[in-house]
Image (cartoon, rainbow, N blue to C red):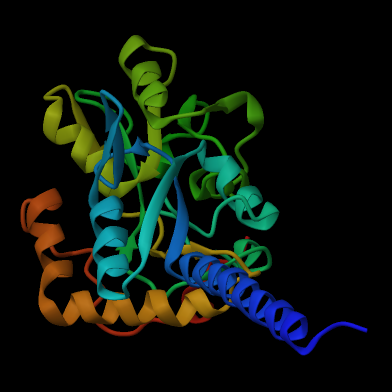
Amino acid sequence: MKSKSSIVLVATVASALAAIFGGTSVAIAQDAATSIVVGADTTFPPFETEKDGVVTGFDIDMINAIAKAENLTVSLKTLPFNGLVPSLQAGSIDAAVAGITIKTSRLKNANFSDAYYKSGLSVLVKKGSDIKSFDDLKGHVVATKKATSSVDYLTGHGFSSDYIKQFQNIDAAYQALATGGADAVIFDNPVNVDFKSKHDNVETVGPLLTGEYYGIALSKSKPELVDKINDGLAKIRKSGEYHQLFVKYFGGDTSGEVNDVVKPDKVALSE
């Protein structure tokens, strides 16, 4: 029969171990709750770009500001655009930023934050081109980025794959335009405008082809992130940080600002 002192000693050790491992479990849980892995495609200036291993851009500053407002820590993971939603589904990332258009098909596989940018597609051509609007593009080769709403728009308007050149990044599409491998680029207007501002030999033609909204894509396995991200977005709007991003990255052009709460299901584009 064990002595009373032995029983007390065992109980004391057991309590100490429970406290240690229990405390560790709590710490791990708390760390997991305050850290998020954010995927980003870095070929979408001025929203995301990478130089010498450093990722910068509108979306990067925005998600970091939101995270700070919500006491979250961001770990950034760079991925190709068409790998972002699958990575959310696989659980290898918690959120994704890349000027992601809110679409009904994407809402099936990911949650979205409130909209934070209003955009649209535009047509970019070389100066002096006979192409003056989208209607002039039939029979011409159009370059764009893979797996984006611009591809959906072109196929939805009767363009065959023979006339659509899809690239992994938009810089390659612009290069195709420059070298004569394509007659035009269709892509998100703020990115086309950013490219145009740095190159004197191109111009956008015709009106915007669509009205679409960008949102932060979030893993469906972490539904609690939707409220946290939306709360953080509301806070940086109120503080003025959100507006300052338009000053920093768009020279004060606020045409893309979304200052009201715009829910993703209300503005999602159908295919």
